[in-house]
Amino acid sequence: MALSTSEEQLMQLLWKQEKAFMKDLIEAYPDPKPATTTIATLLKRMQDKKFVDYKQYGRSREYFPLVKKTDYFSKHVNGLIKNFFNDSAGQFASFFTRETDLSQRELEELKQIIDNQLKAKKK
Image (spheres, rainbow, N blue to C red):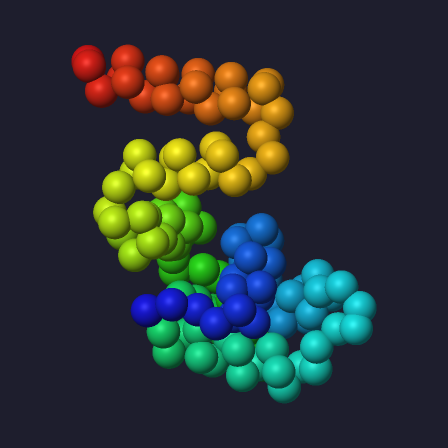
């Protein structure tokens, strides 16, 4: 199940903080800050989707992510490759390197990452 843009923004804050009370999450937003009721609604929807849970401390709830950021991002990238690039990582890489304004240094870094992955796969 996917997150809406608003839920994803809130999830980014929660991933960064690892666990947080609602007041901590609201404080992390840039101005103008969302209403408490808005954050409460988003957290409830994210809990229903099994992305977050909480521990109760008296009347306060400390929220924490149930899904790792890398797992969420990986699923999205794989879906993007499948849906927009005919399930071809090569087509995705070709598009990414052509259509983004990467410097020669950044391209060299990508090449090094790929070379390291190739070496790791051979072992």
